[in-house]
Image 1 (cartoon, rainbow, N blue to C red):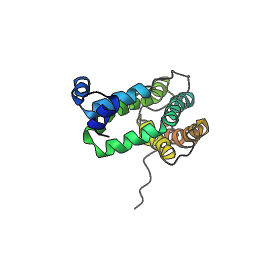
Image 2 (cartoon, rainbow, N blue to C red; image 1 turned 135 degrees about the vertical axis):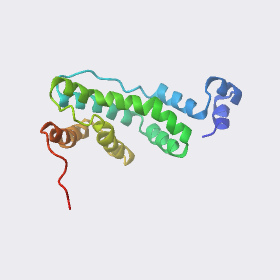
Image 3 (cartoon, rainbow, N blue to C red; image 1 turned 90 degrees about the vertical axis):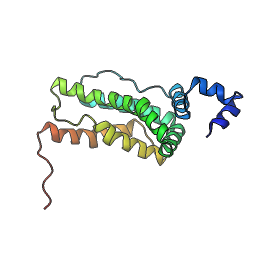
Image 4 (cartoon, rainbow, N blue to C red; image 1 turned 180 degrees about the vertical axis):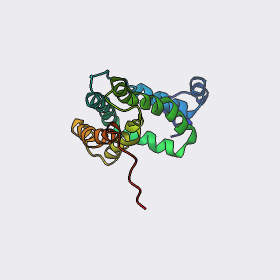
Length: 170
């Protein structure tokens, strides 16, 4: 996609586009933002499991609703450093912040150790959801429940139980 193609499709000049958006990356991110609702905090449920399910079900719904757009945006951002930077700052980082909320709440309630990795959703759950999306497998509530119950909670339980670091394999 080029600015020329966008201007032609919109039947406006490139100058008009650049008056509104300083770069192609800014234009693309703005277009995606208008189409994809920003990930919002679904609110506190009172339990770590409930909060994880709530956040990840919102993510799964958004990913499924806009699957082609998400895949295309990720592919385009991999080829364009400016777009990658814009996507990271305007979409990825705010999404990561919302993903941290269930863990921060669980820490505040004493349900989870303060040593817990609050990036576990970004580092584990999101790649799992995106992998399924990429291969056109269901990213539904059943899969979200599987990720929460069989991946995230066991990982977090090891911190909750005060487990030491993994055994030395020497």
